Image (cartoon, rainbow, N blue to C red; front, side, top):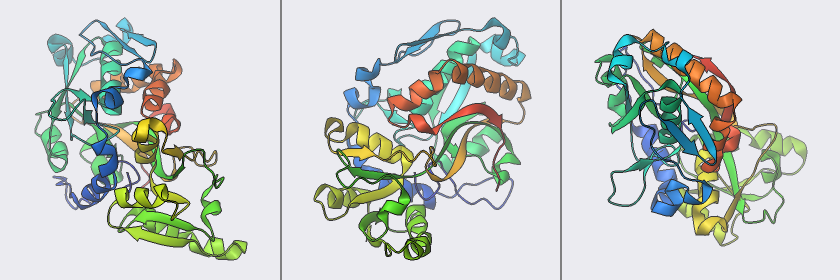
Length: 336
């Protein structure tokens, strides 16, 4: 994502957390090209091993990884969840690669968050059932008890922490998309200095590039020639035609676009080892109702198990962004 590091980062001013949608809409616009690529084969990751929903007490298979119930973790769940066998999940869809439909006109869900929810459910021995909910209504719905958790590429921030708890599963920010094969050998943000680079207007990525201009000037390479576009799909067209050497957008969007556009033959994602989650990365978390502290604890421990056995990385990699997976399941790690 972009105007919010990858996850949704609206500004809230009261404890009812009525989330604004302006930043989110900017990012959704930035991902319009990726959204247009939502075919069954691309979104379901069928060439990646696919996934099948986990039934309560059953198992979940993704990209060759089999996730099975851990009886000890199941015991940590709140009694109400153990009795119902269901964790009710709110999500705002579509928002690729985190939440998508498998095909135009379908109501069947897929995406990074959906797959992770199925893996967590299998590990805990319950079903994570996803329901579509407008983003600005998700946290109020959690507060009202309509849902137990939210999995919707949501940024963990201090203001939201006042009304929900987060279990953080990815760390993501801005990424660099280049032409297939990376002909210009772009490896870091510094390599954009003195060169033409595309970016969507009014996004955090534009702020990132603008802020980096001083470093470019100091390096002697000259400032980047920043070309702004109303939509990221327009920026991608500029990259395709060779008018720019790179397009800067959110890393998950960049990874998904590189994975899906023209069957993965149009673009590449730059992986800077000094910024594995992307530039200016922030934590994205599973939001859990403060009424359910046992559920927060169970999810955190189940997520750690999925980290330890490599499942989380496999899920992220299925959508082209394996590097945004965290190495430790933390809680409420936002710094702002």
